[in-house]
Structure formats: structure tokens, C-alpha cells
Length: 196
Image (tube, rainbow, N blue to C red; front, side, top):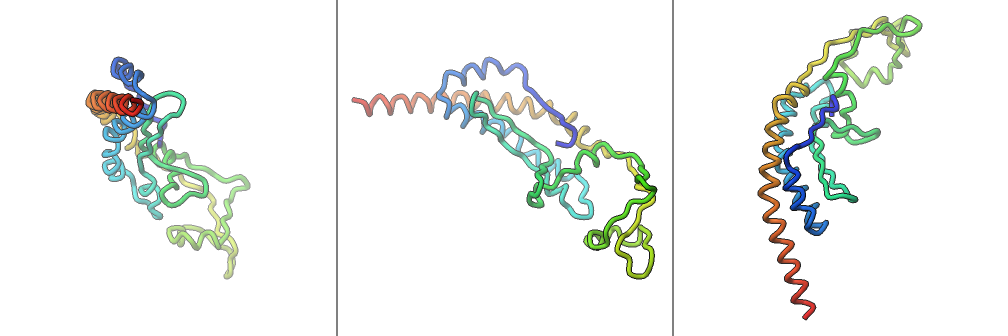
């Protein structure tokens, strides 16, 4: 995520204790389903707050990932910007932190930043904003890299929406615990009738 905003849910200890008596596969199934249902529908709103940019990679990187832990019966939902070295366009949100928090204006070491022309040609937004030396230049030069103030949109969105997501999650967990217990009972009955 852009700024490392994390959420933990208090007040669900009783519900989670009810899940702990169930078999592990049922715990993971219903905890994961509750987390997914409570969080996944936030992706379109988060995408709408994300600037498109020249490549569109940041907006494409917005997503939801569900992680079901193997050792203990927990499910974690990660909502935000995906980044992975060498990943697809959906995983190139590595610059989300810079867009969220901004960067300072910088002067490169040696008073100039040289970017190879082969690299610069891939990005038309660099054209006309830099200096080249000579007719057939092999590099383009930046004498100063301008900073910008971050948008802060993700933090604002998180502050406004996380309490609602928490409430939705508690409601989903309460609804799933009864269904999970019923499924565990059905499995136990099936096992008991097979053994006879």
C-alpha cells in the first residue's frame, strides 16, 4: 500500500473463538470469504482516486489480495498498490509512495543527470522538457529534478473508509460463523455415517 496504512479489528475475539473450535479448512474458507466480501468492493473507488499518469501502471496496480495464513487461522486482506520487480503492468505500482507523499526538488550529483536517449524515447512526456547537446545526442540532461507535493488521497481515503470496512467485516464474520459451524456439523455427520 502507498503509506503502510494498516487496520486491525478489535471486538471480534468472541467471534474468532467460535471459529477456533472448527476444523482448519473451514476456518480458512469462511474467514477468507468474510475478509474478501468486506474489502474487495473498495477497489473501484480506490482506482478512481489514483492518478492515471503517462503509463497508467499505477492505476492498473490497484488491487485486493487475500492471504490465508497456514499456521494459524487468520485471513489478511491487502488493499492497495501492487508492486513486484519484473511483474506485469498490474504489478508496477512501486511509485505509489512517491505520488502519495511527494518528493523534494533535487540537484543531481555532478550538477547534471544524464538519461540515455534509448530510454528517453520510450517516454514521450520527456520530449521537449530537457536539454540535448549536439545534433545526434546519445543522452538527455536534467540540471534539476523538480519535486512535487504528494496527493495524500490514499491516506484521506483510508481515514474515511477503514472504520466502515471494520464494521462490515465484523458483520460478515458474524454471518459466516453460523454457516461455518453448520458446515462443520455436516462434515462430522458424514464422517460418522461413513464409519458405520
